[in-house]
Length: 129
Image (cartoon, rainbow, N blue to C red; front, side, top):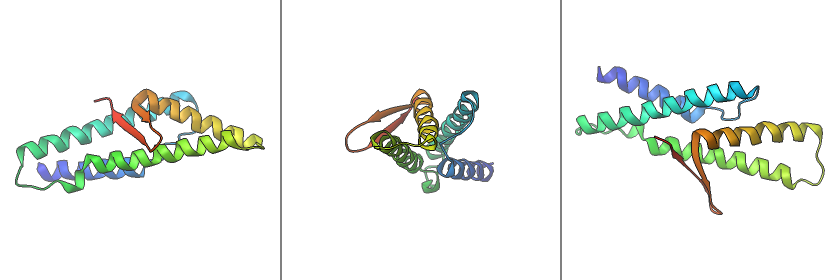
């Protein structure tokens, strides 16, 4: 039982870390993606907490939720910086505007599904669960 849960946690962690958070397409597609993404993160956090609580002798480093949040923070900051550089650009092409739209809409949906706080130093996420 525990090995099945740990395999699933490893899978969810890898999916979360490797996910491309810039989702092109219609708003409904992005909404669906992020709802599923947040559900996976919730599962990972809750399952990791349960395992840590009940199996104190085990070390659950491979499921460190902080690592996933750190990688997600980095992706969000990079996305924010990309949007900012497009805004600050002196000359824009249609492709720049299209990319801005997709990335900006992604940031809006991220803000909706994840609590995002921007500081001068970094971008922090706090999941809603």
